[in-house]
Image (cartoon, rainbow, N blue to C red; front, top):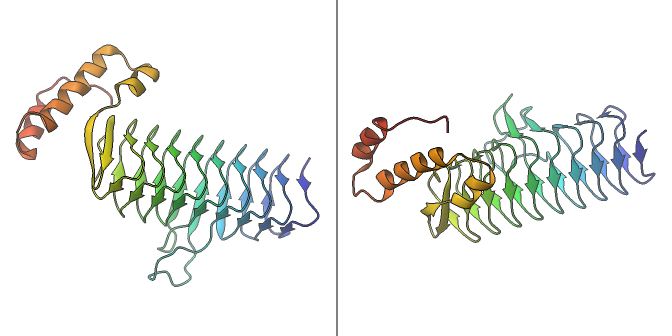
Amino acid sequence: MRKIHPTAVVSPKAEIGENVEIGPYAVIEENVKIGDGTLIGPFVHICGYTEIGKNCKIFTGATVGSIPQDLKYKGEITYLKIGDGNIIREYVTINPATEAGESTIIGNNNLIMAYAHIAHNCRIGNNVIISNCGTLAGHVVIEDFAIIGGMVGIHQFCRVGSYSIVGGCSKITKDIIPFSLADGHPARPYGLNIIGLKRRNFPSEKIKIIKKAYKILFRSGLNISSALKELEKMEKCEE
């Protein structure tokens, strides 16, 4: 059974799933799709061609699907696709893609904390945490299980690798490798997220391989091309 507060403005053309709750003064526009069991808090605005999965929670004042903050955008039909089980906290802003037919994509089971911004064409994996006031420019990719600290700024087209942690207030201008701990202005890797890997039940043998690869890249004194040749000689693992 749906619960829609009488002050909410919900387009009759919007597709609202079963057991969805929509709070006071929320606005749901006509091209929106909301999956079963999702909770929409007070004053939330969901607009554009936005699709939200099942069992998400979107808190007060979030704006989801408003037009991209990109001067190239001229009104093309673009999309925002959000998976299942996501938590989107207060006053988060998430934009769809810029180019016609393209999408901003957010996976499953992510936590996006208050006042974070996810710009056009971003790709967020699964089980990601973006802390308060984290700011992602266009075309940023955040891979699975990455953690972005508070007030981190990420330059457009940068990638943050899986299982990595970026320290608060960092400035990211280049890709962050998977499994790493990164921090600074600009952010640089300074070690591996060993505790995180153990918590995710990585076997010790795989952790040893990751450590060896990290040492070749950052502690051997080799340039990138030479380091890559050494990596090719290593034992491979799925990660």
